[in-house]
Length: 273
Ligand SMILES: [Zn+2]
Image (cartoon, rainbow, N blue to C red):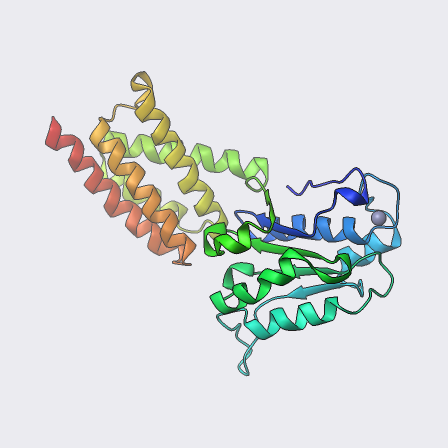
């Protein structure tokens, strides 16, 4: 949920990194920072009601620029945000704003900035001309150079909406019960039945399962009937699934990994018994 707010305009810093599990959540937060930077209403900022706030939300504010991967001739997004895009933004910032107190540059998929682009952004991030505000949206801040990160204020957005999170927590609990029971057929059924969940839900599911297993490792009384080896194997499995999701492996394939991995983790249990 997006929630940044500023008591006054002086609180707004010149460079932010918004870290969010999903691009949509990160974008909402970035937009709020942009709104606050151009807001003409009363604090706390953004007021959300003034003309500038509404234009910002509609993507129509002349002083807010969005930088994202360009598309190629076939209409597909290019792999990287390149150095010229950064230079163009920096040059634009040297020109005074049209109507707002300052200009804003939103790097929508900043983790695709290649190293050259990131290096070129250092001066811009450190001292944006005319008090401009720069926001870098990422899901994994590790993709940014330490020199970039050190110049920005990091804002972390928590997981999506609460309802979705609790549904996925329940699903993770169900999955772990079946793993603990060691019944291959019911595990296979589980994977078949849930293969249609969204990418975001799958990520949430894996995070919930990982958290639950970590808890089980810490509190033996709550170990769901699994031994430490099996639990360790499951933590590793969840981490692997999350890594796969990060590189856009599809949900069905991750379920495949989950199914075979869970069975292997179950063998860990038998081997110590
Ligand atoms: Zn406003």
